[in-house]
Length: 385
Image (cartoon, rainbow, N blue to C red):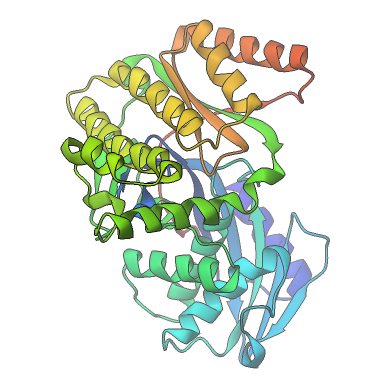
C-alpha cells in the first residue's frame, strides 16, 4: 500500500470517525487519436495516465450518501438516497451522486448509502477526463462494496449515464472505458458502438520516445455549449445521410456524401470520417512497432480539429506549432477543445528542448506558464487497499 493510499485512509478516519472498507482508484486518460468520434459510434485509441482519483469508502445502513473531496471546500455534502434525482446535487458532487443514482435506476441494491472521501491528482479542465476518473472510481468502489459483479463495459455505461442524465453533459463513452479498461504499456483500441476493445502495445521508452501532455491551463467559455452543438450537428448529418451514425460512412464514399450536405455540416462529417481512418492507421503503426510513424498522424489530427471541427484555440495552436518547430515528431490537441491539453510525441533527447520552447513561447505571448507531464500508459481502475 503506497503513501497516498495511507493518506486517503487517514483522512477518511478523521472525517468519519472510522476506517474505510477500502480504497479504490481510477485514472484520468489522454486520447492518442480518435477525437470526437466516440459519440459518432466510431473508433478511438486512449490510454490511462498515472494521474488518478482515489475514493475511500464505507457502506452505511441509513440511506445517506456523504461526500467529501480533498480538493473541495472542506464541507461534507449529505444527500439522502430517497431524494436522489437529477438536480439534487450541484458542482463536483453531481458526478459521484450520479453514479449512485444510475446504479439504483438500473435496479441494483445500493440503497444503504455510503461515506466517501475523494482525493484526485487528475487536473480539472485540462481535457484529461477528471470527471470520468471520479465517476469510475466511485463505480468500482460501489461494485465491490455492494457485490454487484458488473462487467467493466456495464460500469462504463453506468458512469456515462450519470454524466448524461444526472450531470447534464452529453459525453461519449471513451473516457469511462479508458479509465476502467486500460492497462500498463498499452493503448486501448475501442469500438464505441459495441464497446469491443483490445489492448495495443505502446512501448515508448524502448523506442527512445516520450509522449508529453502540455496543459495550457486555459478553458475558453466558448466551449461551454459547443460540445452539445457539435454532437447535434453530427447526429443531424447522419440522419440526412440515412445512416445510424457517422461511423457508418466509409472513407471511399466521403466526397459524394459531402456534396449532398448543408455547408455547415460538411466539416464535421469530414473530421469524423478522416479521424476514424487515422485511428486505424495509428493502430497499424503500433502493431508494426513503428512508433515514430505516429507523428504525422497526430499533427494531421490537430489540423482537422482546428480547421474542420474548429475546437482549437490560440493557446493549443501555439503549443503544436512551437513543439513541431523545436523538433517534435507530432502534436495535437486532445480532449473536448477550446483549451485544455496538447499531446506531443518527441524523442527523449529533445523532450527538455521542446518543453522549454513551449514555455518560452507562452511567456512571450503573455499566457500563463503551461504545465507539462509525461504520459505513461498506466493501469485502469481497481482496488488499492
